[in-house]
Length: 132
Image (cartoon, rainbow, N blue to C red; front, side, top):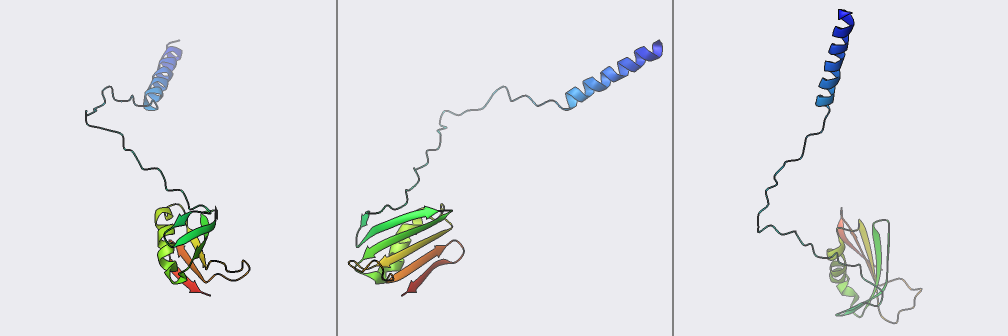
């Protein structure tokens, strides 16, 4: 009978030890907070350009995105400024997209014509301009 009681006492101690070994630590009772601590207010994310948006010297005609890629079609009288236009489009959005394609057309160009220029931006290669 003594063996059975001793065996039960040992198992009880093992179970209590396991329960203490796997318990979660209690959170600290007192949190230190300073009076000057204010929550950080982040600026709202910049929305992607929309069709019809007018900027000095150029206008967005189409803009669409999917799967971390964005395509923007732009009309301008000065297609040689395609690189500067691309920088204005990409800079606020570069953390949201892996690739941005900007197609630059001249106003009144037929819709089925090739664009005057294309600027491709990727995180890896930066800006690459193609003249058609």
